[in-house]
Amino acid sequence: MRPLSVGHGSIGSMVTSPDEARLALLRRLRLAKDVMDRDWAEPLDLDAVAAHAGYSRYHFIRAFKGAYGSTPGQYLTRRRIERAEELLRSANLSVTEICSLVGFSSLGTFSTSFKKQTGLTPTAYRDLHVGRGAAVIPGCYAMLWYGGRDARALRAEESETPSGTGDAEDSNS
Image (tube, rainbow, N blue to C red; front, side, top):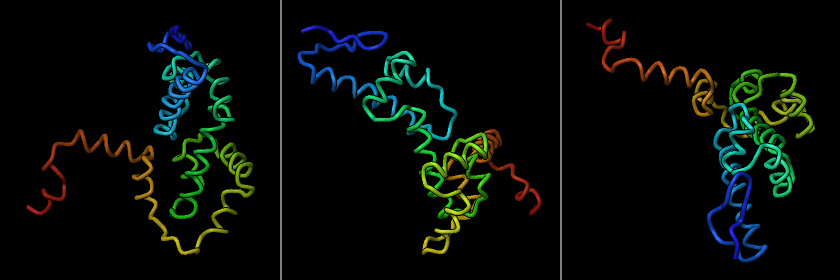
């Protein structure tokens, strides 16, 4: 038995077969994939994600593509478009708001990526799916649920404001 060296160091366990080595590799890649799934709306810091797997950025890209069939960037774009599809079907938000909520900084890039994955523009997708029985979620709730930038600012403000000092209570006195 020999220690399996992966990326910048050793896994810390003894590997006895190629199957065990493959499982160890997949475990490490899964850790990084879980980070991307958790932080899908945030800008991708590939070096930080690769560090979760114990790889350099370039080795991580090759290993990820070998295991999952797409690069980390392609995977994250696919996940973001899936989230955008949900919002377009059910939320009362503009395409621009959805673009921002799902982590795209450019409406053009969002629209191009969306059409490449679904075959439709975001607006055409919404027009096709609106009114098919799904309840429309008010935009403010969708932004809070999906952790939009406005929701994060609101949460930060609420945590800074001491409880019991709201204006509504003062005006009723």
